[in-house]
Image (cartoon, rainbow, N blue to C red):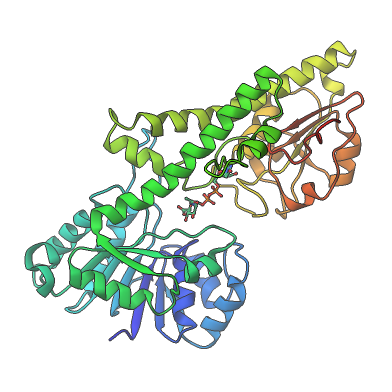
Length: 424
Ligand code: SAJ
């Protein structure tokens, strides 16, 4: 029976999952270590932007099915959705998982299901089971008791796209890696409350690796596109035209080059694989290196443009540079690991003249660039006044304007938004 579910971690994944269960009338206790997140949710508000979710959070809290707390309480199932960042040495940091596991151990009871959703290095779910077994010797766990254990444990990765979370949580297929067949079945029953996609059962280690594989696949493919963009630049080839044509082949589907890879997933998860197989994961490591080097390549292009304008008689302090977009990808307000922010900050540090930013998705610019003298500008003013236009993020607002004129100024369009039409 599933009456109450506790979600540990009310972030980008935990809160939508909690909300979708709660609007289907499952009692949900969301647990977070941040008092302000707990207060915000208990007011029926949310602490980040995600389309459609705000209305659902308000409804779930208002109806009394979703409640946030700082400490775990007894429940029928626990879902752990806490961050797993990288350490300075590019190793997975699973301390938040360990803390979450230790926090639920005292309230666990026979019949409970524990699901790990956080992106994790292979073997983490087995470690989770060992931590729990050590803390609760009065209960049996799958590693000792198999399908007859008191506690069921599974790894079920989230795979939703920020900006489309509500839709994708419901419609995406779900990979369910139970420690035993009974664990998988229990997890499928939970996800069936809101998942309309298929719930596909596998073992725990395949499920863990599957999540890392999906994001590494994307990273490798973006690296291919980024590498192509740099090769094409050297050879005077329009990379956008090239990709469009190559993609007309029925078995070719090249992704889009950009100013680098950001966010908390694609730029992080491949390292989990590299870390576990450093001698073998050569391609995955190379892709990380290509993508991580792209911002520096863009900065070199900006330097080249400055030098070009100086050759035309301008002095550095007269040159106004406008950066279009700061977020880690289009049409969101998320700055995590954003290459666009990194590039803007570096331009501000290096450039003697004015640096401005057009960013329609943020209420205010982050302090790290404001304190470097970066100012905000609206789109029309920046298009009109800047001498160097650096398009970093393909926001819808930027796509809605035609390619700015280039007389006496330079355009560095890292996303192909203002690309020249063929023959121009
Ligand atoms: N990017 C490119 N070119 C592209 C696609 C993306 O440069 O063609 C860049 C983006 O601008 C951004 C970065 O890559 O800086 C990552 O963006 P993204 O849209 O590829 O991915 P995320 O991080 O928003 O979400 C990914 C998704 N994973 C896959 O598509 C395999 C999502 O489904 C996962 O749930 C999410 O990671 C996660 O939480 O792991």
